[in-house]
Length: 125
Image (cartoon, rainbow, N blue to C red; front, side, top):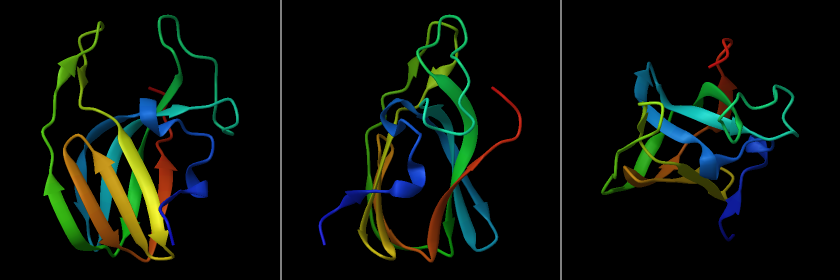
């Protein structure tokens, strides 16, 4: 099976979302992001002045992952006009029902996991 984009992330624009960090939560791994939402997402709101997208903080949750392959990246951290740090974007693919590839400027990883899901934070950013 070739890599495919994940339908679980419909309504997000991952290419313009920002990687914020990684948190281990018991058996799960959370990749923290500032997600760019599209008009198709249920939580979409018009962008704030000066922003290109509606942004919401949230996590990509990997349930009980096993890392199969890990390649370190060469991140290029930049500073946005408002002074916040930009840690880069993400690409996420499924190559089989339980195998996923996660590509950021920080790493390129292939994982086996029971499930991958998007969990938005309750508060607006």
